[in-house]
Length: 525
Ligand SMILES: Nc1ncnc2c1ncn2[C@@H]1O[C@H](COP(=O)(O)OP(=O)(O)OP(=O)(O)O)[C@@H](O)[C@H]1O
View (cartoon, rainbow, N blue to C red):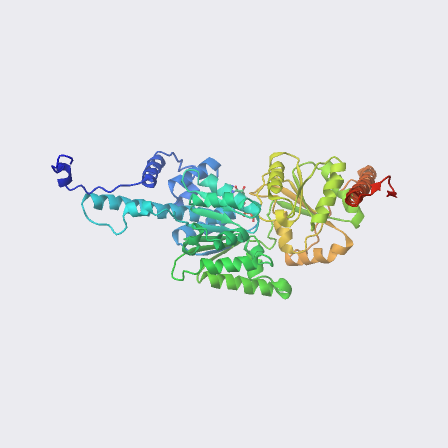
């Protein structure tokens, strides 16, 4: 005191410790959760899993009244038994929530334990006793825990998984970030500064940020949950090396306990496989898969494999069109005109996507392209447009084959026969999702018969795919239009080529101080 007397308050012991904004936020969230309304009768099929109320509310909002089969079979072992899961089920069957719900529920449990500890801290502070971990020190430590990492092979899939989990986690206060290539790294670093509890990532960019020493990601060897989606794709050349590095890093902290989820629609085919696949490259896949299981220290997983022999959805109608190569364009245009609806056309190469886009634009079908050499922003924009407009057409390479969940895709056309049965399953799985109906048509020219037979045998199909019904009387008009469009396309290509040659020659002439008088070129000195 300024007058030299001691403040009498200072003489009274006052053991209250300070708490920060996080503690207040959690308390408010808890109060809010208590006031949430869940119709447990409507959601009774979910009751057995012991999901927190905040998640049940999210499911209620989404009108997911009952779990899908893969979810029913996975959730008890994952949530109640805390076991590692190796899961495989057909495309569109709800695998994301089969690993997403246990992760969200587990994080809420961890956070509740922290709040409980915090309350115990408050109590011990009130009673003057010392708790080992003080709230103040927790609040002061700037790093928020990273609880879970979800790895996926493609950027679009990572964004989709985040959006799906965000919707279920709406009332949980759990923050989810995506870390993918092709987006500004600075922006992603900013997202990580907020300390998301879950990171959904493609391996390349994640590895880059870890190597740059990002502080939030420095906790990857301490995460509580790891999910690998579309695992068989991650085992392929080009992905495996990055995945391997990452997993070694994640597993550095040997004594740390972590729950692992390894999922795909074609996982078990790749890991145990049928004998015909084992012959060519599955031995490698099996060995790589075993390596992943070893690295992750998975010893007693719950194996949930509900893929039928087909691997595709039972609501999918499959058929084929056999024709010569030049005729594929006729049948494609015929299909698009005769059967309007949201349609995804798959090609094996970027060149083929570009060619078809030009041709179909001339035919006024206005398709949207999607392939790996497009800028990421444009890729996402095209996906959004495809999603938002009815009767839209997306022409894509296999970057769009995996996991993308676009509602109401009615048709999937394999303009070129896929090279593997896995690709056939994943491409076809973009339609007939979540018990909806869908059609897939495989276009096959004589050179592709070998691949087609390989697919049929891997998928244990005892019969040929049925022939897609075509009204031949329309084909004459179709051919005329397509042929005309091809001619225009050829001419336009020629003009573009000539223009770029002219541009190049004029530029060179200018540099050399030469005047180009006319085309064909006459040089005037
Ligand atoms: N319990 C549920 N009830 C109703 N719809 C659900 C349920 N769970 C998931 N879905 C919906 O089913 C669709 C497919 O789910 P998801 O994308 O998880 O499938 P997937 O098995 O991962 O497919 P893929 O193998 O192609 O990646 C999504 O639109 C999702 O919102």
